[in-house]
Length: 310
Image (cartoon, rainbow, N blue to C red):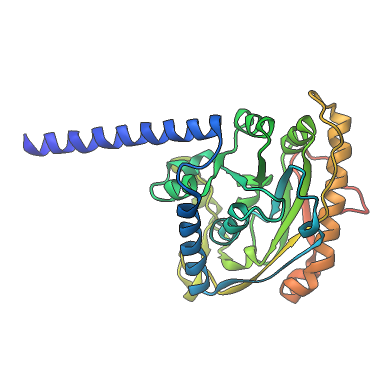
């Protein structure tokens, strides 16, 4: 009986904890701000950065025209690539959000909702100011005047990540562009050169990735890490990271309900700037063979990418 009571007590505690965490996250998404004093968030950020340096993943340069953007404006930072587990955004780029770089104020990363179900990791995300990728949440944040950072390729891009080929996937409805136009928030492209080289993809195990996705809701490509360790997420291959910000892509005045034609127009301007940013820096920031293959742009709506951008 005592064992049953203990099991029931533990189960009750877990359920209560999950509900409290959900309440906290919803409150933050509704009201904005951080759950803790910013110095606590910065302490966590510092610890994550030190660990990244310890395992050999160091940001060795940062540049690009976006560093000189108008700091009085609001932005939607659009970052690439997704990579296998988005190491750079979590372990390195968090300091830019908390230090209000490059856009002049603290910005909030938005990530897959499933990540807030992962113990410990989800608590760290909340402390760092992350929010869920959700249309209503993003709409509320932008209406409030927050700047955000988003990765448009999501799990589709993650599943196809490769250390041999740089890729940028874009959703069929281009919701991030539509939302930016709705609120008149300019798009600021960012590229983390080196993110894809932190792990090596193991080919032929797509069935296992699908099984993991079906059972957990998460998309995890099968990879090896440092020393050839399979799925060694916390032991990436030592790699120099080069962060580059592109020129802001203006979206014009706010439009409550932008047309598909307007969304397409802004999106093609964004693609052109992303292509320029990649081509200008790839040869100095990536292994030679990877840079030579260029950036593969994938539209999930099946529409062709213009020749001058492809």
